[in-house]
Length: 279
Length: 351
Image (cartoon, rainbow over all chains, first blue to last red; front, top):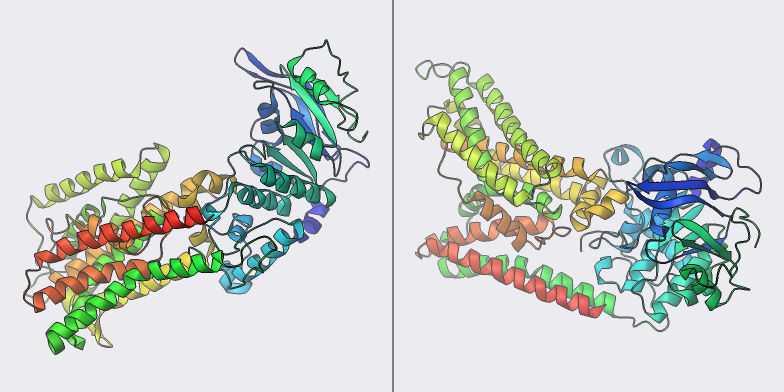
């Protein structure tokens, strides 16, 4: 499954020891006269779950689009494992080991969970048949089931179209797909939007298991309880800047709200946002 | 089901009912095969009613011969519909291609009095021209749909008129005749192992298309593009290219159907293909495809092609006006889609 990482290990630039898997340095983005981001710096350590919070228009989506390669920054730079990276489209980010789970899922509803897991990266049969594009359906089915089971993703039927799944089950498939391919980091845009309590808990468990495999997670969320549950660190954006970096262990619900709204005159002190490993 | 992934049943998890997946699949297989059952019932009905007049090899050969042209069109239409597109222009593209091919063949094959000395090379050129012309129209459809982002319904409604109009301009409204006799004797009506050559070609194309759709990445991407084109794009599938290829295949198949059409009848049929598009689309939908894309099979499509063919043939044999065939097909189409909706509703509620 993740055997692909062994091959790509070689052509990756030597990782800087102790460097964050992904970091942004002084990233700015303007849309005409509108400033979306101003000098934002952020780092995600290996195996760390970072929650990105902020009010609507704080710049979360823009930042996530830049990190996932969907947008290029006007100023500033990205680094992967300490090496400078420049993404011009999401495919380049994916090649670098960064997968994105979009808010509107991105599953092909009429295909099965295994087919979705391997969509665009199918295993083919060996030899001539493979060259003709014949799929190795059995191998994909087997590997997909193993992967889904190992993550504890609840999928009611491995052969049914995912159209039949509940929102939580579909989200599980989407996250599982990202975790099969991600070597470094999974970016998730509001993974629990429109999910119920039980389903949210299911997604939280998936995120923790993904983290336990050494893959970092950066997620946008509006749900404070969810963030307290899964995140190792909370970064709050406000008006296109990092307003605070908080630890769920010490911060309170009110601290987060204060940082998001800007109330309380910076009660939530930013403790330096480039210290990816300081948790 | 759109995929044929191996038959490994997931063990029921605690707290999850064990049955629904299996039950849903069984229900799906049953209603999915409802159309196939309808075909069997029709054959049994006409056999009982007309006996050996209907139930004999020669009559079955006629049925598949008459269905072979539609089958070629329906294969292309199935790929397009599964890919979330629609092509209304196929009948006109067929006519335009066969008119051009017939002109080329007549011009190249030499005089009738001399027994069409260059008939064979003219026919080869005619095949190439016909398939190539059809593919060019398909390419045009695909480019207009993807690059100008005009819905395929509109684009192909436009090219339907353009292709037919141009065919009429070229022929001044009269059909092209005087095709070499080799065309009919060696291809159109030539029998091979008991079946006419056009039937073998249609079977070959259908089997190949079915295998590609079910077993290859091209087939998988066709389902993905029709299911959720944005998801396909994000997964790295070249969606625009894929849709253009689907339209081009459709056009090429219309061209192939066109050249086989003139090989059988030795004349073009400028006004004879006005409802080809609807017949092909109906066959695909009766065969279980969704007009919204993402679902459908070539096997189902073949059944959807054969039902009208059997009806048409059987009704003539039992002395019912064949016009009833049109009525019956309309009703079957509506019932097929209604059943499909019921099935979908049950699936959604089941989740």
